[in-house]
Structure formats: structure tokens, C-alpha cells
Length: 134
Image (tube, rainbow, N blue to C red; front, side):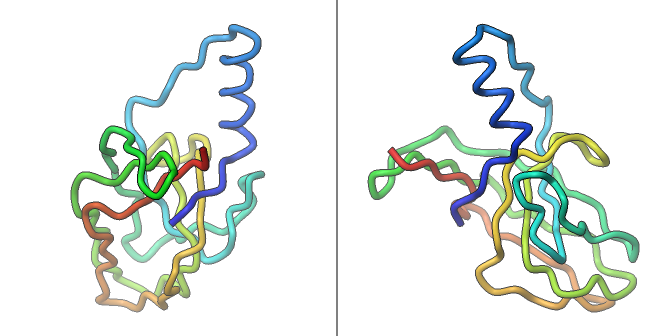
């Protein structure tokens, strides 16, 4: 999954690289599920209620794969069991906090799925989540 960078992160990186304004990276990164495109402006609809909670995610060191810088999650990511229907999950995003915080990247899910009560969404280890063109 190639991700779209958020306006917020773009601003932080440009200020750090071009203006010498320090960027304070988040202590943890969380995977969030969406029922609509978060867009680079952070305007999508995140799943809420029914036992939903963002999940922490840890990444590998970047490597070059097929000519692109890539980082993958280092462990399976399991969301809580849905206690109500969450709707059609069409996008995922990386965020800077368990609640609130800032959007980092987002992408469409290759195979959107309707999460119903009793389901437990899972993303496997070594899923390519962040990729940059070189």
C-alpha cells in the first residue's frame, strides 16, 4: 500500500528540511480505520464506537524495494473485536496519538471490508505501509 502524506506532515518535514525548524516526531504511531478517504487534509470519517480503538504500530528500518524506499510493520496488528457494526472500512491511516493527534499518512485498503459485530480486523506483519518514490 503506497500512502498519501498528510498536509500536516508535509509542512513539518518541509519546515525541518528547508527552514531549520525542528520536527518533534511522535513517541508512538497508531493505525486507524476509516469508512471514507481521510484525504491529505484529514477530513475523512474514522470508525468510532462498537469497541473500536486505534492500534499502535511499529515499523522496520527503511529498505529499497523495487526502486522505492519502503518500511513495513514489524508485527501483526489486531483490532479489538467489534461489538457493533463498524461499516465498510475503505481506508487506513497512521496517526500520532491513540485519540486525536495528527494524521501522518493514509491509503485506500486494497480489498475494502464491511466490519460487523463479532469481527476482529487484522493486518499481517510485513505489510508495506509506507513507500516513497526515489
